[in-house]
Length: 452
Length: 167
Ligand SMILES: Cc1cc2nc3c(=O)[nH]c(=O)nc-3n(C[C@H](O)[C@H](O)[C@H](O)COP(=O)(O)O)c2cc1C
Ligand code: SF4
Ligand code: FES
Image (cartoon, rainbow over all chains, first blue to last red; front, side, top):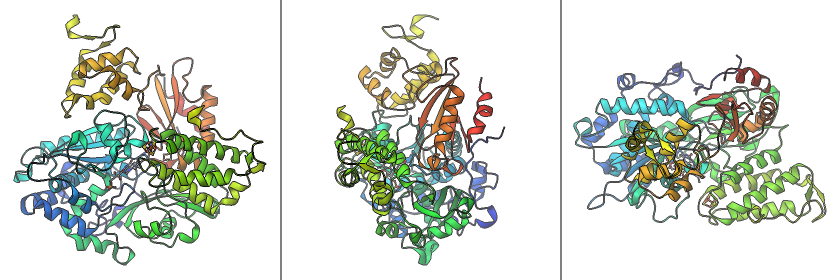
């Protein structure tokens, strides 16, 4: 049969990956098999846990993570050390929860899958360090339901780690106790939003919650709860083993952010895939590693980090792929996995596809998101058919604005607004070409779908 | 089997003792029983293929929560099926990277081969076709999942061969 089963695969061979330069992937095998406990421990695995739990204080861990400037790899780029410093702990405060966000569903993103399937012990080690820093009593790995292979790998690793004493009571003779359970989801993108994830973990509908209180103050079951992305936790062991300066130096002159990043490319390029590179590596290098566009096509536009990031142009390829630089360009680094669009592909159609996704995945709590997104989709479909009316493009401007930051309960709607607003800015002519009718002749005044 | 070994809800839905134990085991992983709700729904679905209405009060009873709390959850999540599904569920990624890799052609080829659209089940009960969010396999798009396995890239011309392997 010509169709192959999917296996997560890094594009860099073992020869290129070294402990000093590739903290996330140096242990991975070229054959993509899971790194078991023995192999992990044989390659310095759990050394950071043994060292830190016995010789450093929780505050030392927070300070080192802060200084290293490990920014959240789930998309928002918030400093992990800063987040950990804000967790309520000590005194009479009960020990709470540490949650790994492994809900990876951002369109165009396939990075956490690699770490979960091939190196779950690195995640577990990072979570133990996180738990120590945050006084967490219990951990959950919130894994999307479709990641069946990852569930197997993670469960095996949890069992191995518990058996070997890396989880449970008195870890590595330090007196610190912590354990982790695997929680698998049942679909819905919104579960990845951290407060919705907590609702889902509690066995409820995944509706986001108001902040404040922040999860670090009152999260799962009212206890302090720390939520971080898979890749964020996976950075912690090397940071603690080699120090903040070493981590900062990995990205050197390229960026103020520290460390490396799992970058990737998808779309019609010669060689799609994943690479671990210093954060701040320019998009051009990634595109070169991907062998350029397929069939000699030219690059039209690209998304730097998933469906909820803003479109960028070919001229932005030389900018550093880090949180601040891409933010200054009006987009977001997001997950750091590039989606490439070639000269023949329609941005209008792609935006329609993205907004259909966001409309379907809205939890329905706030009006702009619940009603504005289906409306947006209708307008985009009309333009795509060449049946738009005068005023439709301006209406889309307004909808993008209404979906923007600060107007809804969670960042789902702003995430939907970003590709829309940037496409309207850079590729306005594609939208305008779909306008062929005077107002109110092609379609009835667009009705908010919620009212039909 | 005697009645005490089974959980029988008012309208006769039976949670097998083995499933009941699995649900109780899951319940112990969390601070409150409601948290095991999604896992309980999945356990029932694993046995029956879907979650019939009558299963809701039965699950609520095992967890000691209200039926409305279970029902609200059961209708929210896309991987909990509230209608009978085929022996194999095909989840087709309809997100951006696959879209750029001609997902729509794959979707049409699947529809043509099976004679059904999204949300439908073939008359012989073999397949149910559903869309799904980005499967995290975008480097090999267009992608789909059949039961527990992800495949990619799947060209429209591969569809017949691929489906042949599923009885
Ligand atoms: C709609 C939505 C979906 C999200 N999905 C994910 C996800 O799948 N994985 C993830 O790590 N973060 C996701 N996030 C970001 C989380 O809310 C949160 O910022 C993150 O888990 C924090 O971890 P980090 O600081 O380590 O990145 C999502 C956010 C939104 C608004
Ligand atoms: S912005 Fe959308 S997804 Fe977020 S809470 Fe509001 S309705 Fe729900
Ligand atoms: S967009 Fe289809 S697998 Fe990611």
